[in-house]
Amino acid sequence: MNTLLSIETRNAVLLKMAKLLEQERQEIISINKTDLEAYKGDDISMFDRLKVDDFKVDEMIKSVTHLASQEDPVGVERFSFKHDNGMQVYNKTASFGTVLIIYESRPDVTVEAAGIAFKSGNKILLKGGKESLKSNLKIVELWHQALEEQGASTDWVEYLQFNRTETQAFLEKPTQKVDLIVPRGGERLIAFVKEHATCPVIISGRGNNFVYVHKDADLDIAIDVIMNGKSKISACNAVDKILIDKNLADKATFVNRLIAKLKEANIEVLGDASISKNHEVEVITSDDIWYKEFLDYKILIGEIASNQDTIAMINKYSGGHSSVIVTTNNDEAKMFMENVDTAAVYHNASTRFTDGGQLGLGGELAISTDKLHQRGPIGLQHLVTNKWYVHGNGQTR
Image (cartoon, rainbow, N blue to C red):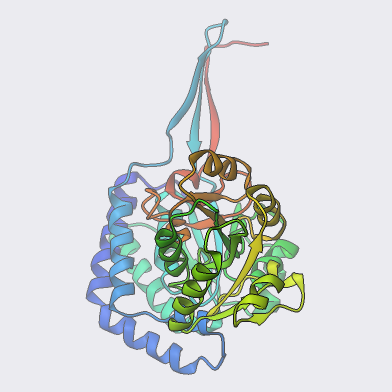
């Protein structure tokens, strides 16, 4: 069993990791090129996530450096109580123990998510996808170097080179203690982990995010929020669905302007029956497409009767991730925000802010669409459980 590392050691490992990433920058990028060249799939968002360039290395360095500057999330007192019998009772945060992160194609997860789990006092098991194997192994080598230099066991970060069958067997009957599993990837990966795991899983759910353009919208804001929401198609916080209030003044002009902007950005535009009847876009053949997360240069525009109908529509079809109302009417915004059942709700701002770094957490392990034990971006301060500390001098009940 690994005894909890002191916060000084954990921080020193993270800062050493930042130095090593800088030192090995070119090596990481060139190893990643071999992964990119070997990738034979046709999933553009997978390819985008797989790529490591200078910007990605900068982000990795920024992430571990920032983590090292944050307060220790372990041992934080959440509650205290003095019992009538003189016992002193505390409830404090505690690390989970061992966290398994299963992910696809993103070598930066090997730094950022592992860093968060490590800082919060956990042993890390990493199971990356085969498409990023060489990049991941290089980064794990750096983790081991950083740990060894601080006199810590390399067991704190372990890479599992399992194929799908071995992964399934490990999920069903782990050969070592696993306290929490975090799947990072598409819906198929998440469903696979949920089906086979025997311990708690933090579900980093699908996106399929909606923007509602209310009848009192500022139309320039609406265009900006939609275009920004579609600026990174591989992100789970990307926008896929637009609902236009049928009472919007000069609706046809606005929709034409929006479609022109989207097409200029090479985004394929689909429409429901009423939108496609009045505008030159492909009509959808089934309502099932409202459920679909695109992860592609594709967007669907529909017409809606009211805020009430919008809330019902989003609560039925969205992935529970992020949703936006664009309006100048604060009462309508309040109604939307209180009743839409997504982890993040926005008024006149882009869904692209659903991200741990952007929402002030410094980084994230995942974006959870579950309601227990934390919803939305899971930061350092959420990756803990808790424990009761009771101090007595012989009390019995």
